[in-house]
Length: 157
Ligand code: FES
Ligand code: FES
Image 1 (tube, rainbow, N blue to C red):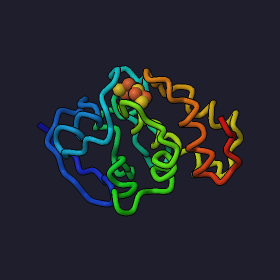
Image 2: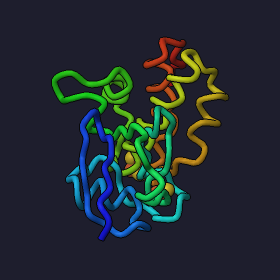
Image 3: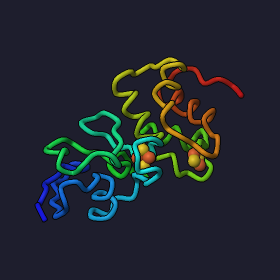
Image 4: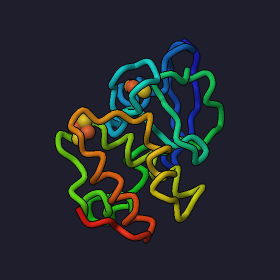
């Protein structure tokens, strides 16, 4: 199997995998990074989202052979329990999770949005997260969390 050298969470990691292996599988199975979740495996739910050179990207449909020297950031690369990323802190403050399965994708997509648009409108937040599915129905709290992280007014429920 070919060897691929990846830049993940600021570290250089080398894996021996088939060229068409999805990045998600490499992150979870070879590198032990379980922040990105397997949801649909078809690029349709957002659970597997990572940052790819800072942009929210679905890792389940990205072959490892396409990664090259791009900077990949997973949930583990954002913050720690002691020092969470501001978006993670906002999700905690707003209690924006029930089962939590979608939250990796919600957080990573939100970080990607805020890096491009520091003060998004509610419509921009909704548009950015429209492709991230949450079976628990926590969208309202997730939107409030992104507003909190952005420092934009949080609507009262
Ligand atoms: S698991 Fe990647 S989009 Fe659903
Ligand atoms: S919190 Fe359960 S899927 Fe979103």
